[in-house]
Image (tube, rainbow, N blue to C red):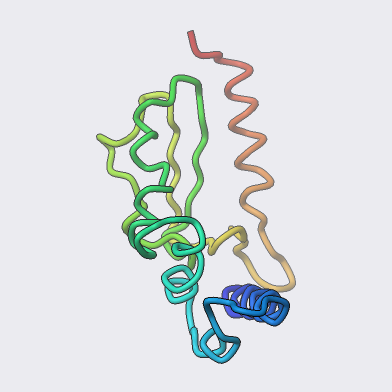
Amino acid sequence: VYQHHLLSRMKRNLRHKIGLIDKAPLSEEQVKTWRNFTQFDEHYTAKAHGFAGAADYYQRCSGLALLKDIRHPTLLIHAADDPFMDQRVIPQGHQLSPCVDYRLSHRGGHVGFVNGSLLRPNFWLETTIPEWFQQQLEHPAK
């Protein structure tokens, strides 16, 4: 739902911009045919910013290769079902600095990390993040 809503807004904004340009490199009709972020990034984002295509854009803008260089305690939280970040961006142990506390949950979506029920939701981030900071204060890294 979130992905569809965001993509629709991005496409609407781009179509509006195209309408303001006399010789736009894309047509509003082309934009209407895109069904996912990869298509949006392949046909617009990558080309507008000098990348060869969506794959080149994703690879060159990824911070995955930099995780091993982190030198300060860092909490990274990621959900395996995040619609924006698929299995290719889940780091392997050797890609992480010892300073990184990486927590991968099976569910959580992009920013939700809500479980429980509609009547009794549990907001996992609201306890996880303060607990991590408290741990850092009690046992600071040397």
